[in-house]
Every structure is written in C-alpha cells, then in structure tokens.
Amino acid sequence: MQKYLFLNIFIIFVVSIVTNYYYGSLGVFPIDTFAFFDSANSINKNFLPIRDYWTSNGLLVDLIQSIFFKLFGVSWHSYLLHSSLLNFLLAYFSYKFFTSEGLKKAPSLFYSLSIAILAYPSVGVPFSDHHSLIFSIVGIYSYIISIKKKSNFFLFLTIFLLGIAFLCKQVPAAFFIFLISFHLVFFSILNKNYFLIINSFLISFFFLFGLIIFLDFNDVGIKNFFIQYIFFPLSIGSERSGDLSINTFVLSIFKEFKFFFILSLVMLYQIIKQKNVIQLTEKSKIYNTNIIFLFVILISIINQLIMKNQNMVFFLLPILIGIIHSHVKLNKKNFKKIILVFFIFNIFITFKYHDRFNIDRKFMDLQNINKSNFEQGAYISDKLKGLKWVTAVNQEIFKNEVELIKKSLEYLRVNKKNSVIITYYQFINSELDHNLYSPNRWYTDDGISYPLKDNKYHDYYVEFFKRKLKKKKIEKIYTIYPLDEKAFSFVFKNNCYDTIKINDMLLKHNILNCFAKLK
Image 1: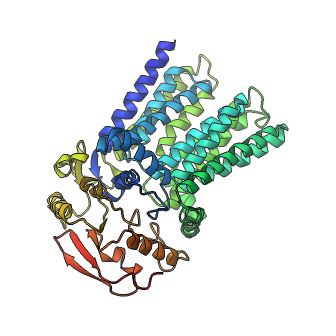
Image 2: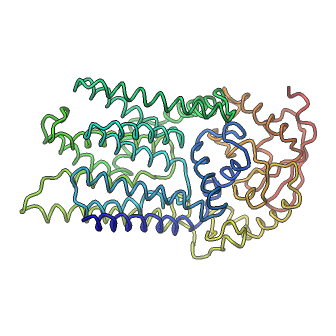
Image 3: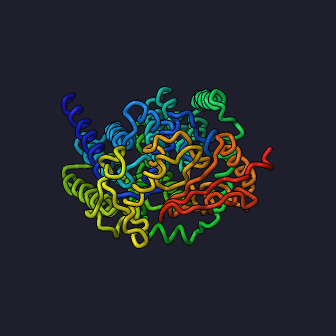
C-alpha cells in the first residue's frame, strides 16, 4: 500500500508542476505576469517591500520569490518553480485531506489532479490572490484535522498558514481568519474545551511577536507596515464592499457561481440528514467539514465579487465534490450510479474551466488572441527563456512591441545611472542588472496601487515617494508605454521635470528641482 501512496504523490507532483509550467509560460499580461519578478530580485539587492517601495499587498510573495531567485538564479524557470510548487502543495494536501475524511485513495487522487489542473495554472506565475486563497484553504484543512485529532500541532499549523496567507494578501485571508476564530471559540465553549482558545491565543501571540521582530530588525517600521498594509487597503476596501448589493450577489450566484450553489445545496442536505452536527462525536466529525466549507463558499464568492478580478475560485469546485463524495454513505444498489455522477460532474467542471482559463488564458485577458503566434521570451532576455511571448496589450498600437522593448533595453543599458524605471514590464531591472528600484511596486490609476488625491493617505504616500527618490539621488525617471509622466507627476507640486521621447515606448523625464522644499 505504501508504494501506491508514493506513486499517487508522484503523479500529483508531475501533473501540478508540468501543467503550471506549460500554461504559465503561454502568453503575457505584463502588469500581472511580472508583478513579482523585479521586486523579488530587488530584495536580494537590499530593497525591502514597505520599507523601500510602496506596496499594499504581496509582501510575503516577494520574500518567498527572492529566496527562489537566490537559490536557483534569476530566470523564468525559477519564477514559475515558486508557483508550481505551491500548486503541488495544494493538490497534495487536498489528497491527504480527502483521505482523512474517509475517501479512498483512487477518488482522492482523481479530485486532487483536477485541483492541480485548475488552481494555479490559470495565472501560472506567482500571484498574491492565488497565494492568499491557497494558503487559506490548506489552513482550513489543518484546522478541521486539528479538531478531529485534538492536535496542537495542526492548530499551530492552522494559525501559521492563515498568517502566511494574510501576509500574501489581506483578503480573503482575513475573512477566513474571522471564520476560524468564531468557529473555534463557539466550538470550545460548547464542548467546554477552553484550552483550544488559550493555545490559539498563545500561538497567535508568538506569530505576531515574530512579525514585529522581523519588521523592527529590517527597519521596515511598524507605522509603515500598518499604513501601507492595513489602513490604506481598508480605506479602498470599504469603497469596494459598498458597491456589492444583495441583488448583485444573488444574480451572480445564479449566473456565474451556479455550480457552487448546486454543491452548497447538496452539502446542506447532508448536514440536515445528520443529527447532532455540533457535538464532537464520530458521526458528526465529517459534518463540521460541511458547515465550515459552506462558509468557505460564501466567503470566496463575496471576495471574488468585491475584488472584481477574473474568476479564480473555480478550483474550489473539485474540493467541494471530493468532500461531498467522502460523506456519502453508499450501498451496493447506488454505489456505481453515485460514483458515476460525481466523476462525470468533476470531469465536466475540470474540462470546462481548463479550456477557458488554461487553454484560452482568460485570467490573463488572452482569450481572443492567437497564442500560436508568439515570440520566444529568450529573444528579449535570457532571463525569460521558456516564456512564449504573446500579449493582448498594444496589439493595435504596437505591432512591433518586442522590437521596441529590445531597443528600449539597449538604450537603458548604457543610460541607467541615477535613474528609476516605471513600467509594467517588470523584468527590465533584472535584465539590466539595475541596482535602483522604483518607490512603488505598481502604477495603476484606479486608486488600488497607491493613494490618490482624495485618499487620506495621499500626502503620506507623496512624502514617501519623494524621499525615496531623494535618498537614491535620482536624476531621471524612465517610463514605458502605456505609462507616462501621469504615473508620478502628481507627486510633484511644480513642473520640475522635462520629458524627452526616446522611442515610441520609452520616455525619459529629467528631474530638475523637485526636492527643494522637501524636509
């Protein structure tokens, strides 16, 4: 039996890694594809998120990726290795969770492979939303096991994983932290097991203490951390959540999340069929899983609607099918029919979303692009070897996008001194081996990347930005289309720079006297 276990794990590993590598290398959506490339590499050059550049999420994604670059070199392959391994960890822990719920190894493997195909390959590259949701789900697995086994180790692992998820991105991790906290307190009081609460408090305290030590040791600053990572995201999150109405939620359930609705009804039916679902008895253990995952569905859908991103929660569907399957009591009469229904439904789900998000690359907005017409990433940079470069960006404006990037690289290679580069193509610093990183991770005009003028943290951001430029003695700022001076001009009160066009993509902005009034 042990050899079959290793074989199953090996199959999960191969499918998880190969699928993510293949589809993650197919196409480019610059601002997302390279979101953590230059920023992670800059950490190995003594730049830290929050301390040296403004970031409102993805703190830990950067730090983890910097380790991969340190160990395996700065390349496309080490970039995808990070996300591919996390894809494997989710599929592997899903497999272990299914078997712990009583599901046999064969169907556990079947559902886990579906998860491996659907989870990370939709985006392929390291991405804060995927990291946060995946670490949260694995944390919930751990919590359910800790309840069943009365295990302090799994309780510790739960808190650690949810903390890691939060440091990758605040939501949905924060919602899951509230869910688990409420369930733990309610469960502890009901079962008069107050050690769960005490142990959880102690573990959480040491986690937070370790975080504070890290921030202090690296001069990140507690104030900087709270403003950039907590308070500013809360200020934009409240605006987004205000746009979500009951009508929008209900319509989305029946239109976009209908499969979640169907599976939720099945899980609810299983709960109703079982008595004493709260008390911890042998029969009720599995139904704590159903209750928790009903809330997981609700949280995931609400978070998806609030974030207004491409759908990424569909990989939860095989997890839900696996959980339902593990809780079905079968007899000889209904065995084959029930199993067939589960398997066909899971195959349908897997093929449907695999086609839409992996093959068509919908998450990266490449669904209408001919992906067979690509350039080799190595033509642009040796660090992008393995990437198939095709984008939806600037197709009408720039037919020669790749050539313009190469020309821009040639110019920047000999003119990078005392400069920062503001671009969506955030592999350029790494290709140039540039030692200066921009004061901001992303430059979008939607108020998500940094505080706009109507945000209460705008002045704080402006001072932060200007001080970083002054400290590094920046004399010029380069912007690459679609970004231009609008990405930074609001930081300066006067027209203290002049702009020179280098080519159709690259602009140089000479900083003349922008820091005279800065204290």
